[in-house]
Amino acid sequence: MEIYIVRHGQTIWNASNLLQGNADIELNEKGRALAGETGMNLEDVSFDKIYSSPLIRAYETACLIRGHRNIPIIRDERLKELNFGVNEGKNFKALLEDTSTPFHHFFDAPELYEAPERGETFEQICERGKAFMKEVIEPQQEQLERVMIVAHGAMNKAMMCYIKNHGIEDYWSGGLQRNCGVIIVQLHADGYHVVDENKVFYQWE
Image 1 (cartoon, one colour):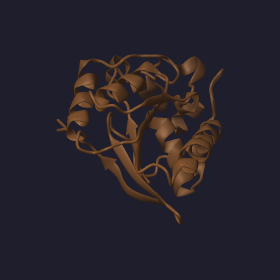
Image 2 (cartoon, rainbow, N blue to C red; image 1 turned 30 degrees about the horizontal axis):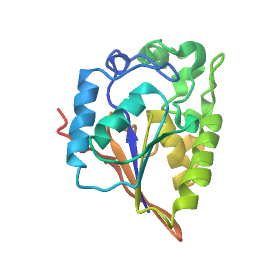
Image 3 (cartoon, helix red, strand yellow; image 1 turned 60 degrees about the vertical axis):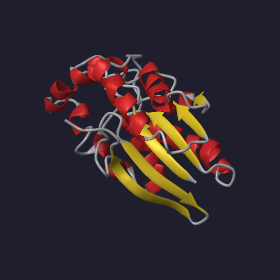
Image 4 (spheres, rainbow, N blue to C red; image 1 turned 180 degrees about the horizontal axis):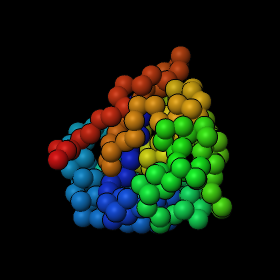
């Protein structure tokens, strides 16, 4: 089985460096254009199913990539982005620069990151990602040739923690995906094989 793990297109909050998390922010025009171009360039690649986060930015990306093809899109709550609690809507660059807060460690030392009030830990999102792969994807390994998963920057890395079997300290291994970036993974009888962690199917400006 081949698995395409896609990050959603750009939103106005992405463009403004605001933390989205579980906030349901739609794509902006650039995000829709990137998703549409990605879909056109994947038109000849067949997918049996598309799984999507229920958040509108991911689901709309999945719909635009699918285009007019008859591919089912299945929304799964486990694919939602990391919940940032009281930090949602705040400028993440300002949070990263504030050395007095655990968010300062988000990218450079994720093992030291602590969830804010009403937020979620890396360990919790990793459990969601692992559960989705083990309960949804792996049981279909022999039945399906290729699937797409459309979700979010941190969520996709949570799935990769499971796929690559590494700890929270290596959470961002391979780098943060661009909007509409694609991670391509193969699942064989002997396990997962990462083909490409930074693929894009559009012209990057």
